[in-house]
Image 1 (cartoon, rainbow, N blue to C red):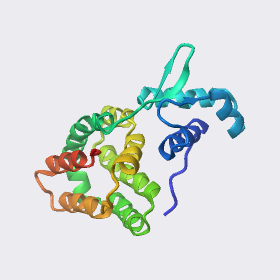
Image 2: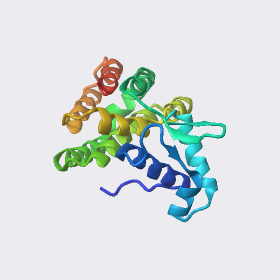
Image 3: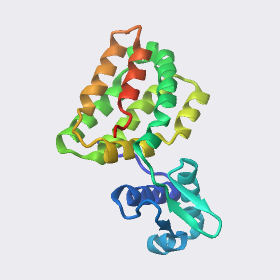
Length: 207
């Protein structure tokens, strides 16, 4: 399956910085120099500044006067904070989308198939990408713009990346976990909201 296109330069730069943090290129407490990134990527400093501002809004980095931008010293507890909020939103989304998704699971099945391939190859990047896409399809199917905007504002992809790659060292069958959710939609499980909420909470990072 062709990966989704990253549409903006800001998003590409954000992913570049995020990958640098996840891989250890920038350690906790280390300064991220805006001008240096701009030179390295051969772009102006404006989209770099925008990407850094977005990562700061997600509390992944922090800035201080005369000290510049630095990587936060994140712990598993920091990452876990967004999960109860996300779980509540997705519970509502699942309940609103239940009727629609009971009849139309094609989009969800597509992401499960991609996750199955990612599980087999151990492709962590693909696991993150298709996990987030799966959950986004559910929230989108709810047909509530406020709900979708609120969910998107949590920076789901960023936290999922860090949770899987930093705090989930044990292999996990992402495809099977999500297939069970598809099956629940198909059989019109009256507890689909609770099921999805429990699933999201189970994905929270563990120390």
